[in-house]
Image (cartoon, rainbow over all chains, first blue to last red; front, side):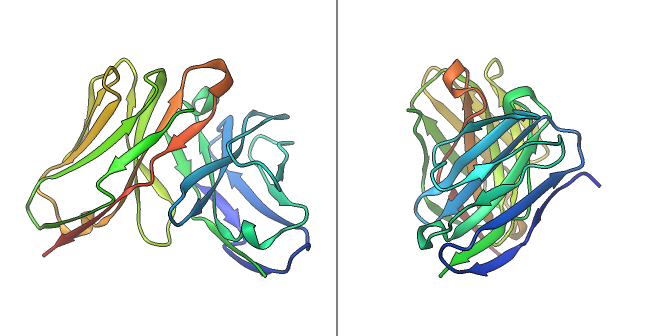
Length: 114
Length: 115
């Protein structure tokens, strides 16, 4: 089954404790991206990647890091999480170059930073 | 910067009525526009993708139109059903080199279809 898998789905952590949210897709997509969704602010893009070893900032990259060492994986790293990073996070991938094809989303990861 | 607006923010209709959802964007230099559905606590599911060269796309009861010159897209859902209750979002991707790969989403329209 074609899918985008995120882990963990739910996480409660404390300020400053590094964490990684993994994202994996099995569709051989070149484009992958991360978003956060907050009430009243909608869905905002954090980082995206158009190919292995190629990553770029979205609209809200501060406090986040990403890496793309393999085509199927695109982890989101919070080096020192803060309460304002409490949010619902989504990973997505697309078959089109630069994300110009249909966008497939994961189920989301709800993160709470205390 | 590209701004994407969806009005209304919420909509409630009786079953069987047609739904009309609006999406407007400020910059007409878009590559394509996608409509998504999001159920509570779930990820987004792509419904329709319209290339900038197209005027509309259809899938079953769904029809989406695109007017780049006026910066508008409309999603029509015919003969609504309670199962259509969800939040509907639109997103655009721009063609300019500094925006390649960047998505801008609208805040969504929350739809409730009552039996």
